[in-house]
Length: 204
Ligand SMILES: Nc1nc2c(ncn2[C@@H]2O[C@H](COP(=O)(O)OP(=O)(O)O)[C@@H](O)[C@H]2O)c(=O)[nH]1
Ligand SMILES: [Mg+2]
Image (cartoon, rainbow, N blue to C red):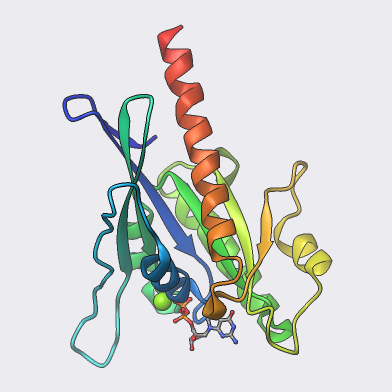
């Protein structure tokens, strides 16, 4: 996992925000970009790529330089995918080399089918890289909790977090920046733990 540059002592970690169209993935990245502060005061530019044709095909990319860990300067790269069904090729490309995933679900009742389909699509696309979701650190975000017609968290856990050991899940209202950093902190923590454990087992 992760790209490790021994020469520059840099660790590059790729986090992909995945989920159905309009669930709030881009909003998460915009909020992180607006509020993030790193030790060096440095944050990357939020880049949205869009084609000029009427078919908007884009992903967002936000590099963040975080703390040094075990002498490595850690860079988190946050990506989103386009959620629309027809953009599956882009989703596959963005998933290449993924280290961790934030699945942003839309909490509105009438979006449950889209959430489940998008999660199945994620698993399917990981397969094309011979990856299983169980092998990748990920967290769930149940977004848009501010809206009136949301499904109970227990129901969303039942639909999306039905593993032997559940993954961390967070409620959020990304447009108000609620839950955004809780989610990001957890996925970065999971990834850093994984990195430390892997470097320990290599050293052993
Ligand atoms: N009410 C509400 N709207 C949200 C929330 N998060 C995102 N939105 C809105 O939902 C729409 C789609 O969000 P966007 O981030 O573009 O979704 P994406 O397709 O997953 O990238 C935008 O109009 C956002 O302002 C939220 O927590 N609550
Ligand atoms: Mg988006």
